[in-house]
Length: 163
Image (cartoon, rainbow, N blue to C red; front, side, top):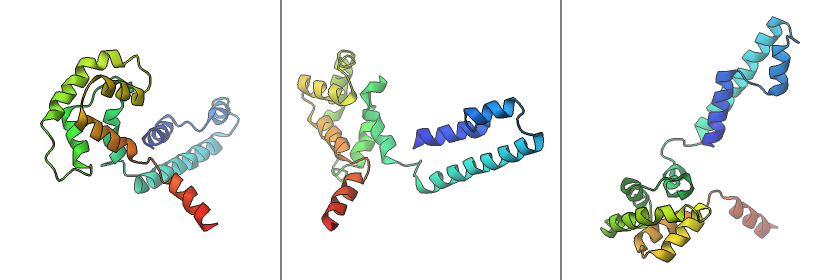
């Protein structure tokens, strides 16, 4: 949703409404007053779309943004603070995070260069956990991977139950 938001914002800034419209406006197929009217209406539609998604999508304090620190494909490792933030939203949030998280993160840093060649992020985590014993990191990664990204499965299951 963040990418969609950014795309719409860029289209507003660039006054871009699709390639066919762009070409038609550049070639002067519309009188100036019609082109200005269209541009104003299309920009207003983009602004309404942005206002709608900003109203209903939590761009701030979103869990998925917090989860993204575990994406090893981006070439960055999670920081200790990011792991502690994940711990704070986990089922174990009432417990003090174990001291070993720091050592487990250090182990991840030492083997990370060899993991870059292993495929996607999940495959990298699997290889890491095969090479290193890191039960607390494993707990965090399992928690994040168990959170559904949507309720689509529930919608399908509940619809089949009703039928």
